[in-house]
Structures are given as structure tokens and as C-alpha cells.
Image (cartoon, rainbow, N blue to C red; front, side, top):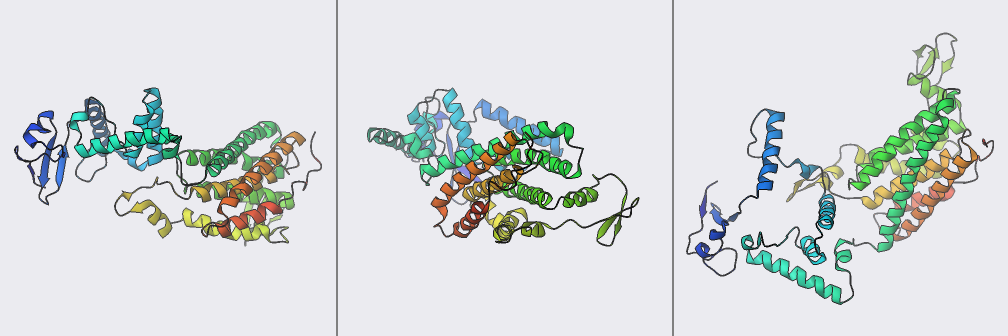
Length: 419
């Protein structure tokens, strides 16, 4: 692509009103026109930026064995961090640097513009006007009794929703803590009985998955949560299936190589070689959802949840359209579906904690703790549902969640508990 530098006697493109040769050029800010007539601005690179790019180029060469060329991406962070992540990092840095609130407000309003003694002579009049207007707006809002920072950082949804979501995430976090405590309680006794051993294995895996979900929400990858939430749901189905039909645990363990003995396939079943005992095929997830579900609350929820989760767990146009925008390119970190994501994660955590509270080898204290967590999450979800139940895109989803949550009996199977 060819480009031509502005003539010294042309008006400077920065709009200050001076000639190019007397305005930006002496400050080492240069302007060019390309073959299409578009203006290109060239600003000296700060030494810190230069060093950072040199490091990135060195990494590129080490990985690919060649110099980066046109179209190669050096700043890979664009695929790792969302706009929200960058804003949070800026806010942390601004706090450490003791940056004034008006400058923070202007930075957010101008999408990343900071004016200082070091760069004011390198900014266009348009940039300076935008920055100064943001500063004036900050003080006007402050004078009217509005917190400008809270206003610009706030979402379009009521503050009550934000507070409820924070409470919900906190409750789900405590599920992780209590799962860890449960593993420590049971570890020495885990191998004594088949059903309890398989329950123990499920719970031990749940800790890592719950941690992944927590990390996903922290980093704005809302859609990605459906992979992990589906695993939580399937774990709930298996724990529930083992409680209702304890022999199901033996089927799972034999097929995953965890049961003692030698097995061979006999049709759709397995057969233990030493005893000739047939081990039936474990029930499918659909069949597990139908166990003791006379009212159909769980099986109905199962259908809705699996259809929705599959949209984000398998290749689909929904994933492509939400990650790719024509004018922005591919942005896998784009924050989206946060409301649905936290609702799904919450409802699965509620029914999962409720189911864990019914495991017969739990102490009464642990059972009560998980039941309390389940009920706390349930209450928050019901409050959240009030904000979304009338919205067309959330209505059926939330109604299904509420039917399932309200069908849970907190007093079910709370007997024969250890003390």
C-alpha cells in the first residue's frame, strides 16, 4: 500500500487550525494519505511499548521459527481478555497510581483516552475536545448528586439484579468449599462400599468443575459455562440415580474399570467372569431424569436444559454469530448470555446441593449445611426470576427452572444420618 505525507503548508488534520509543518510535525506526529485518500496518523512509539512488542515478536519467532508477516497476530491477548477484563485491569492500575476520578471517568467515556503533559501535544483537537467534554460531564454529574463512576460502570439492568448475581456467585463459591470439606471427611472410608465409593468419586470431580465455573464467570466467558454446568447436572442425575437405585453404581463402576474383578461384554450387558453375574447397562441421562418423577418436573427440565446446553456445547450458528462480528472480527471472549449462564449454574447448584444433602453417609451437620446452601441459592434464583420472567427470551427458561426448584422437598430422605 502506497502512502503520501501531508504537505508542510496543508492544514493539519488534527483540526487545531495550524499548518501541518507548524503544528504536529515538529512534535514528531506525522500524517499520511493512502491510495484511497484515507488519513493515517503516525505517532512515536513509547520505549515501553517498543520493548513489549519486541518480546512478543521474539515469542512468535521461537514458536513458529519465522518472522511475523502481514496478517499475523502478535497481541494474542485480544483472544484471551474481554473489554470488561481490560477495564478491570485499568481500574486496578488507576487505583495504584492514585489517578483522579475525573480522569478515570474520561478514560471510560472516551474508550481509552488519557491526556497528560507527555502526550497532549500528540493528540488531535478532536481527541482533546472529546476528553475535555468528558471531564466537564463528570463534574456536571457530580454537582447534580450522581456518582459519575458508578453511572458509567453500571449496567442497563437494575442494581438489584447485580447484587443478586453477586450473592448467587458467592453461594455457589461456598458449594466448592463444602465439597472440599466433604472429601476430607470421607476420604478414609471411601473404599468400603460400592455406592458410597462412586458417590465419593463424583463429588471429588465436582470440586474442579465448580472451580472452572467460578473462573469462567470471573473472566466473562459466560457461554463456556454450559460445558461445565452440563457436567454438574449429569453428576446430579447419577447421585440421584444411585440414591434411588443403589445397584446403578455397580453398573457405572464396572463399565469404567473401577470395579474389582474381570468383566466381558455379553450383548449390551457386561458379565463378571468369575461369577457369571450380569451387569446391566447403566440408565441413560434421560432415563435417570425420569426416575421417581411422577409429576414430570425433572424430565421436563431435562429436555429444556439439554436442548439449550447443546446449543453452546456443539458447533452451531449461535456460537459463530455470537463470537464473530463483521466489523470486529473473531472475539471469543465477548461477554454474552450472562443472565442465562448464572441462572443455569445457580439452579443446577441448588438441586445438586439438595441431592448431596440426602447422601446417607453424610453427618447431620454436613447434610444441614448443603441443604442450607441449596435453599439459599433457590431463594436468590426465585428473586432473580422476577426480573426476567416477563421477558420473551427468558420466560420459558425461568418458568421451567421455578417449577423444578419448587418441586424439591427439603425434608426428603433426611433419616438414617450419622451423628
